[in-house]
Length: 322
Image 1 (cartoon, rainbow, N blue to C red):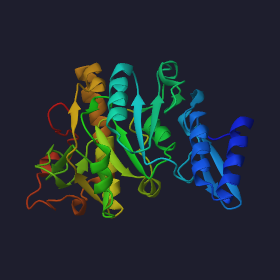
Image 2 (cartoon, rainbow, N blue to C red; image 1 turned 180 degrees about the vertical axis):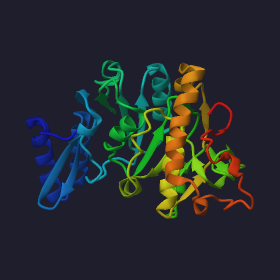
Image 3 (tube, rainbow, N blue to C red; image 1 turned 120 degrees about the vertical axis):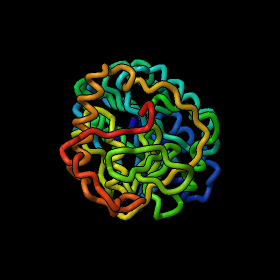
Image 4 (cartoon, helix red, strand yellow; image 1 turned 135 degrees about the vertical axis):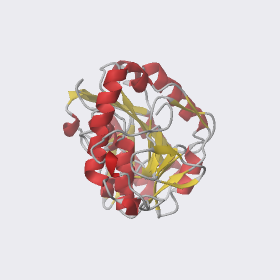
C-alpha cells in the first residue's frame, strides 16, 4: 500500500541514493534489502526515489472501489500472485506455501483480496503478503479487481485456492507471455463450437478461454482490457467472459502446461444445487449479452448449422467439476 514511509525507511533510501551516486552499488543493494525487510520497495525516479509499501494490510473493511490502483506505478516485483479469499484460508495457505517453495529466483508479490475479515489475522503481519480487507458483501469479480489493482509486477497470476504448485509454475507462464500475441495463459483451457457447450481444450496451444483456476497475463494488458465484469458476484463464467474480452482486444488465449495439483473447488462445493443453477444461469446470461454471435472470437468459427431452438435457453455446459 502506498503512503508516507517511516523516517527510518526514508533515511535508508536517502543513503542508498548517495551510494548509487557514488557508484557504490554493493552498498546500494544492501540498503535496498534493508528497506525491503522493513516492508517497503524503493524505485529510482528522475531527481530522487519513490517508496511503496509491499507487505501491508489495507485498513478495512473497505469498499472495493476505494482500493487504490498501483497499475500505473513502477514495477518492483517479477510476478504478482493473487487470490480472492471468501473462506477456506487453509487452502490459500497451502497454495502460498507452495508458491514460496517453487518461485526460484522470481521476486513474487502475494496479494489476498479478503471478504471474510479473517485473512488480516492470518497474514496481516506476513512480510511478503498484502491483504486487501474488503466489505463482507463484496462480489467475487469486484474482490478480484481490488486485488489486481495492487499489482506491482509486469506479470500477474490470478489463482484459486484449489490450485497447489508442485514445481516451477512461474517460469513457463512468463515464457509464454513473452509472445506479445498471447494475452492470457494457464494450464486449464476450454473450447466451444456453439458458445453454450464448453469442453477441455485438447492440449497445449490456443483455446477459447482460460479457466480461472489459474490465469496469467501481463499487467499492461490488464490495464488495457480492464478488470473482470463486476456484475459477476459469483465466480462462474467470469473467467470465460474476461477471456473473450482479451481476445476482442486482438490477443490470444493459450494453454500452457505447468506443474500443479487441482484440489476441491470450495466455492462450487459450498453452494447448493439450486444456488449453482440460479447463479450459473445469471452469469451465463451476462456472458451471452456481451458475446452472443461473436463467432470471430471462437477458434472453430461460425458453425454451419445453428440450433435456433436454444435461442431462449440460457443454460451452458462446462467441463466436469467446473
